[in-house]
Length: 173
Image (cartoon, rainbow, N blue to C red; front, side):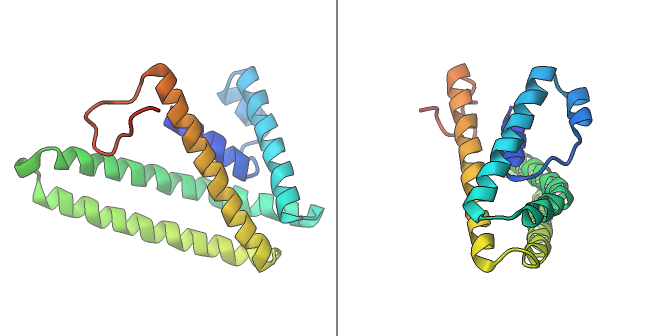
C-alpha cells in the first residue's frame, strides 16, 4: 500500500512516464482515470506555483519522465536495504557482522547514486528554470511527498494496519 501512495505522490510531481494506454492495462479503469486526474491537477498546480510557460512545462515533463523512474528504482532499493538491515539488527548479538557491513555499504552507495541523479536532474532543470523556480519546485516536491506520506499514515490508521513492535513504526493518530 505504501508503494501505491508513493506512486500517487510521484504522479503529483512528475509527468506520466507511462502512456495512458499502459496505465489502463496495469490498473482498473477507475484507478487509471483517478491517476490521470491527479497528474493533470498536479501539472496545473506546478505550472501555477512555478509560473511556467508551455515550453517550460513540456521540458519539465520530459526531464521528469527521464529521472523519475531511476529515482523510484533507487528509492525501492533503499527501502529494501533498510528492511534487510532492520531484520539483521533484530537478531541482536546474533547479527551477521559481514552482512550488516555490506548492507551499510550498499545503503551509502545507493544514497550516492540518488544524490548523483538529483544533481544531474538539477543541472537539466537549470537549463530552463530560474533558480527561484527550481527552489519552488524542490519545495513543491517535498510538499507532495509529505502529503502522500500523511495519506498513507491515515490509511494505515483506518485499517488498523500499523505493524506492532517494528522499530521506527509510528502509531496511528
